[in-house]
Amino acid sequence: MKKRLVLFIPLVLFLVMGVFLYKGLFLNPQKLDSALEGKPVPAFQLERLEDRNEIITNESLKGEVALLNVWATWCPSCKYEHPYLMRFARQGILPIYGINYRDERGMAIRELNREGDPYTKNIFDHDGRLGLDLGVYGAPESYLIDHNGIIRYRYAGPIDQRVWSETLLPMIKELQAAAKLDGAS
Image 1 (cartoon, rainbow, N blue to C red):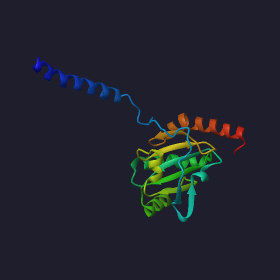
Image 2 (tube, one colour):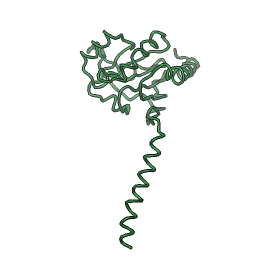
Image 3 (spheres, rainbow, N blue to C red):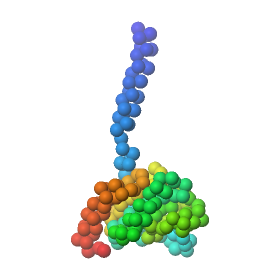
Image 4 (cartoon, rainbow, N blue to C red):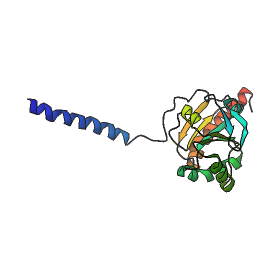
C-alpha cells in the first residue's frame, strides 16, 4: 500500500503540472490583465527627459486622449516599434507620451536625435518607479488613456501597423468621440 502511494503522489503532481503548462500554451502575452484599466494614471512628478527643469505630472496628461509608451534604449523590441511610432506621430491623431524606463538620459537623448522623436513629451523614469506603479512587466508597453487621465487599455509588446489598425485606432476613435461629447478637445 505504501509503495503504491509513493508512486501515486509523483504521478498526480506530474499530471497537475502538465495541465497548467498545457493551459499556458494558449495564453496571449500581449493580453496581460491590468489592474489599472478604468483607473487614473498613478500620481507622479518626474523630469522631462530632455529638460531636467521641466516637471511632468499625471495631471499634464489630462485634456485629450493620449498614448503612454514605455521604452528604453536597451530594449530591442522598442527599436522594432520605433518606426511605427514615428509614422503614427506624423499622422497627428493623438499625442504620444514616452516613458523612458530605467535608462540613461544621455543614451536616450542620443537615440531620439539619431532615430527621430515620436513623443509629444518624454517622461524620464530612471528608477522605474512610474513603471512599477503602472505594473510594467517590461518594455515596450503602451497605455491608452482617455481625456480624463483614466487608463482605458494596456498593450504589452511592440506596436506595429496591425496592432495600430486593428486594436488601438478603433479604441482611440471611440475615446475621442466620447471626449467630444464631454466637451473636451
